[in-house]
Image (cartoon, rainbow, N blue to C red; front, side):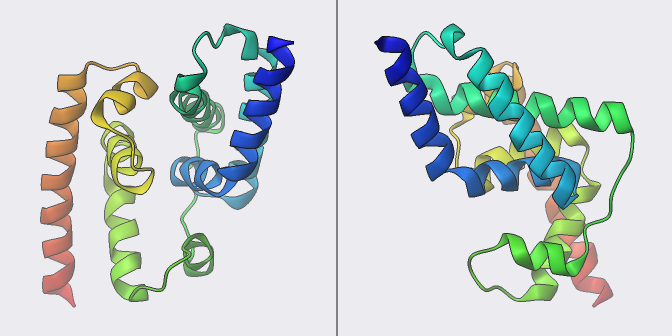
Length: 166
């Protein structure tokens, strides 16, 4: 009976957070089809290992970890970088922002090393706490804090350079 409830809870979670999962995968793979593949494969991996999740309170962190690792696996396997186009970028956001600033931010994020970009995306786009980010990325909390600080510093420099160019 507990296993059926766990599956039901998982399906409800996946269904209600599908946009966040897609956004996170897309932030890594930069391609619509690859992001959908990553989400689908992550769901499959999660369902097949759902019994390993001991505490349902950690479902989000547990699934994000699977999603991030699946994204990184795909990047390692394909070793390719896909440039995000303006149309794909605009399709991701539910709110309307100045498109040029948004593109500048996305370009600046893309130039960050993956380990730094991951921390920024999980913290500010997925609204995870530092402790949860550490769990998702299998890193020490202090390492996550340091990467976040350095990433924000790099983004500030990157965005300042963009402002001066325009």
